[in-house]
Amino acid sequence: MLQHMRPAIVLIVLFSALTGLVYPLAVTGIAQIALPRQANGSLIEKDGAVVGSALIGQNFKTDRYFHPRPSATTDTDPNDATKTIDAPYNAANSTGSNLGPTSQKLVDRVKAGVEVWRAMAGPGPVPADAVTTSASGLDPDVSPQAALAQVASVAKARGLDEGQVRLLVEASVEKPFLGLIGEPRINILRLNLALDQLKSS
Image 1 (tube, rainbow, N blue to C red):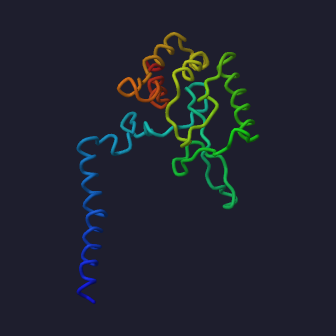
Image 2 (tube, rainbow, N blue to C red):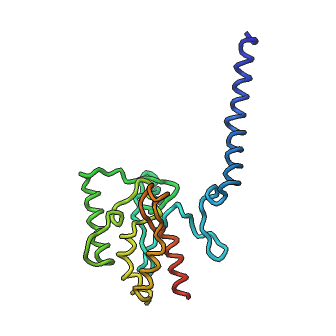
């Protein structure tokens, strides 16, 4: 019986070592050599300190900054562990709202978002990504239309020339990969950091 079990035991140990140790270490090593910034989370630094990741949105609330796409992530209520509370851009709980098109809660949230948007950006078309959440709830990017619509309010809050802020937004547009894959987009964290530099220049 041991004669029949020995090959199975050897194979289990061998493949456990290969797939659980050798392969992950090899892939990690290759990633650190070929794409070290991406392998370490695409972190963004300011004055030598990490201020965020290019892959995860942050909640900018004041008029002095461009606002990101809404987030539907939640967290455990600190007062009642059986309940959840809104916690925008909670990377530990990446998820969409999973609310369907007939959900009254979704309709109410979008209507409230439209009102907030119009108060900030004024009349005109409301970009869909300005009032809807992404599937992950962590989307760091917005459409150029969503950023451009915020130019006037950000420029006013900072006392900057509107044309200067518009040029900064236009310069921040990232093109689709190879000109084909994806949509034009603007990373809000990078844009707001560039905006801070514009203020100090």
